Length: 222
Image (cartoon, rainbow, N blue to C red; front, side, top):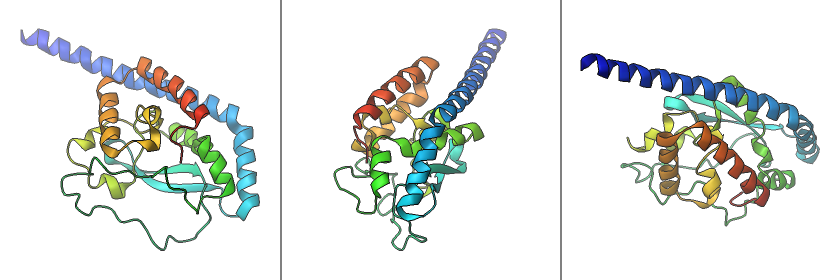
């Protein structure tokens, strides 16, 4: 009986490792193809950003990755250049039991006056996310997975909410194809938890197909 149990556990471990390796291979292939195909677009976006206000092309921010590890995420800058954020957003008030289900990180119903003209376009088409192909190559992110959150928010995650950190964050994910910025934190957590429990190559392909539809319709973009 003990040997059967051990054999089952061994096979589960092998399957898990095989899934991780295969996902990594797919991530690298898709990222390389994505960089090659979108390189002309990325160069054009970089030129447009520089021409508008001569600030840095990339926006680099610390995010929380798999198992709580911190990494730098790359995006095309879509906000007006400001050397220092004089009024940083404060989080955590009344969050002693985790991030509230009602919390929304970005309110898509309110126009942000700090978004540049170029920023409006690249945000609507999600082109600001293209540099994250390099995050995938570095191994900090996956093509598909929960979107990486800032550490100022993940620091308040409850034990249950931290389950979304068990996998690598992604450029796109189950929550992104089901509402993007239109959903609440509670809805996002439930969708990310679903992905963590049911992740597979088939689900990743479905999410990628749905991502194309969401990007083309600009639904939930801010």
